[in-house]
Image 1 (tube, rainbow, N blue to C red):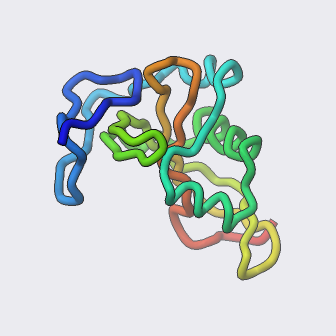
Image 2: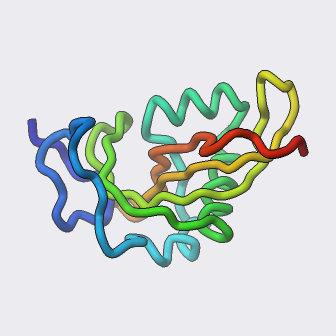
Length: 145
């Protein structure tokens, strides 16, 4: 089944939905080096069910999602670029991934904790939305905030 590429970066895009064992890495990233300069004029939206679930569990709203995206772009460590599947809208996205230290609400601790967060994002093909494909803890929590 041919899948639509939803990101601005499209070079070498897979034609079909990505399988779990399929190579996803895109060489030459980051793909969106000017995204930090554009993010304030864009909407920031989750595009996977997993990101929606993480947001609900950790009490993250859309303003918080924008904050995590900006934090990743400003102070995060670039990890790699890769092709990713999205659910809403359905399609393939070329994303840059980052890790960044951030405070998140921990339901088990019932308080804010500081941990390393993994953020995977891209600019959509319309140029006015930053799509967040992944947002989750990258490692175990380091400290209580």
